[in-house]
Image (tube, rainbow, N blue to C red; front, side, top):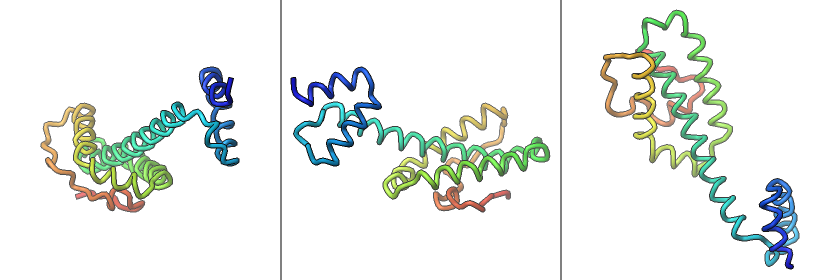
Length: 150
């Protein structure tokens, strides 16, 4: 039984230990001993997780900006909470963001905005017609001190 076969079995039993072993093999440049099938699967999964996390954080920023801008009935009670949430989501997103993730967010901003609007409409039961296009640029959404309150 080869090291790669043992790694495949280890992946099924203890994926964290498999990861540590894989990292060690990479550091030692023992590429022929790698469990490539599971390594590729993990790398693809990691990429999907990263983009989904970034999209989720951006969606939350948009949701809270919309609440801040449009939900006047709740503004007095929730103003500081919503601003705090926006800041927190921005810190988290900016700490997570890479150039590639930023590019992917820019590409999918239309869909992220639509899902945020859908959530806000459901939560607030507004009859307000929100802008059809995102009123915020990605740069504004990422800017720590940007709060649009027309």
